[in-house]
Structure formats: C-alpha cells, structure tokens
Image 1 (cartoon, rainbow, N blue to C red):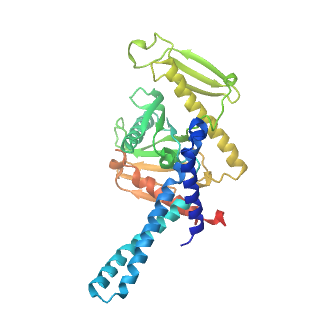
Image 2 (tube, rainbow, N blue to C red):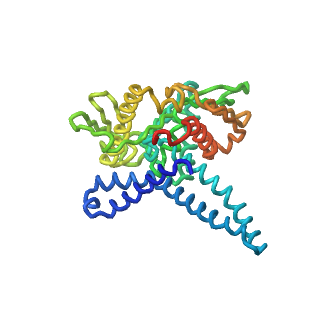
Length: 359
C-alpha cells in the first residue's frame, strides 16, 4: 500500500505516546502529560483507521487461497467474501488518504464565535439573532457547550452583536469555514410593498488559545468593573460583577457581564482576549509565510461574502464552492452538516495528495 512506511511510523509514534502516558514521571507533570495526551489524541483516528485497513487486508488475503479449494461451496464463500472485502478495503484506503492530509493545528481547539449585524439595520440584527440560534442548534446536535460572553440586543429583539465560547470535540475543525459575511435576502416584516431586501452579518470563528499558546503578562492588563445591565435579576445595577479587560500593548478590549460572579466574568473575558491575541499572532505568521492557511478561505478577509440565504426561494448558496441547497428552512434549524461536509471535502482536495512532506 502507498504511504505504508509513513503509516507504520505514525503507529509506532502512537504506541510510544501510550507508553509515555503510563510513565509515572510524566503523569506527575501535568503540563507534559497534557501535551503527550494531546499528541496521542491527534493521531488516534489515523492509527485506528490504519489498523482497520490492516485487518481488512489480512482477511482478504486469507480468503484468496479458498478460491483454489476443490469444494465449490468453499469457492463460492471465498468469492462472496472477496466481493465484500475489496470495496471495503478501497473505502478504508481512501479514508486513510484524507486522514493523512496536513492538519490545521487548530482543528482540535474550542472556538470564540462572534456574530455582528452589518448592513440592513433592524433586519440585519434579526438575522444575526437567527444565525446565533442556528449555530446554537448545531452545537446541541454535536453535544458542544455554548457560553455567551456578551450580547447587545436591538430595539426589535435582534442582536447587534453576540460573542460566545463554544467548547467540545473538534469544534474549530467543523466551524472554521463559517468566518465571513453571510447575506440574507427576504421580505422584512416591516416591508409594506412585499419587496425583497438584502441585509448582511459578519461571523468570526477564532480558535480558542490556552496558556500554552499565549502568555499574558498581568502587567499588560487593565481590569475595570462595572454594574451589569439588562436581564439578570436582583444583582443587575447593584453589584460590580461585569468586567472590562483591556490589553494595553494592543488596545484590545473585551467585556463580559453574562455571569453574576465577577470571577467567572473575568475568566470568560480572559479566554476571549487570549483567543483574539492568538488570532493576531496567527495573522502575523500567515503574512510571513504567504498566508497558507488563509488561502483555504479566499483572502480570509471577514468582509468577503461567503454565503447567501434566500428565504423566498428556500435556498442557501455557498459562493466559495458553488454549492446550492434548496432546504434553507432545515439549515436555519441547525442542520448545517451537509454544507460543512461539502466545504471540508472541497478544501481537503485543494490541499492535494498526502504524503509528499514525508518524502
């Protein structure tokens, strides 16, 4: 099989990592153990698929000699077994090729989801709220957790802006292609003439950075506290639980008032700030190396229109890959997986055949 040596090396690396995870010295060092566990987790799907490939290949080889048996019944059994195993082996081999493609180092990370209303006034804020509901529904299906950090409502019940932390299994790998401008075409409720209006929102998906990725010097942070506003019960406007965190070197400002506890708001704000600093550092690196990862999503500029949601035609179109689905009503209920799958497959193919870097 092609890439067999590469796969054998990866399997040997996996077994070495498993031995390290059982080493008392590594278990005693929390940071080292976390790094080892993360490395093991990243290659586990590939190793599992490779072992499935080897077992299927072994079963196929065991069936071949039976074709030479004198017993016609055994020959028939062998042909049936081979007819089943050969396409299965081809399918597993193709899945291995996909798993061997270069990985985005952020794929395993949680994300900071930011949605902001753009052109279109009140209609844009209503669509922003609907898109946040879409992502929340999708997250529920994936068994992810969504924690709102801050939200700003409009007078008509929409959202001018919402920032949330989405945590779970491989969140960034699923949502990373959602960054950009999302355009909506429909007749607003306030429109008397029945004319279709076009509005837009921006979505940003930032990989959440942890302390290993971004070190924040406490001297570089200014913390301001203030009273929460909006719904929240007796604590609203009576306790200084809301937090505004300013990163002095960059001027980045993050606010959080979702929790009644100042400590929890501060922790959430720091997670968002860390992720924004990580994004800034990534952009610097990408500019230096020709923006390799950004090439997967056009220019990577969040002002780039990526998708149109046409309500009169029940149609959603992703302009990057020319995909059109006439099931907009289902998509708005959180059934986003067909679009995510199509985008993932498209950009994996664009990356080319795996294994070249191992030559």
